[in-house]
View 1: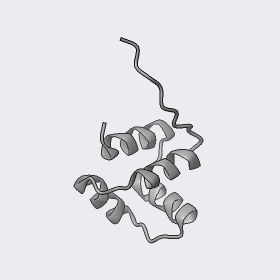
View 2: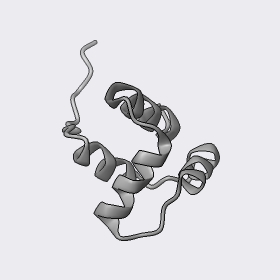
View 3: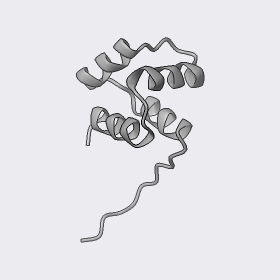
Length: 70
């Protein structure tokens, strides 16, 4: 799963669009994000893991590494 798929899943589950996700990232990071810049980062696969983690945390998700069962 890449960052685009991850953010798309988060947005779908929370019924938000990229504009709302960008606003959340601005509030949490203080960095400049717009709907377009977020979309571009996702398309180019340049969204940092920390940015995706911050978005997930702000939406109430815990990212826990879990070992796969064989």
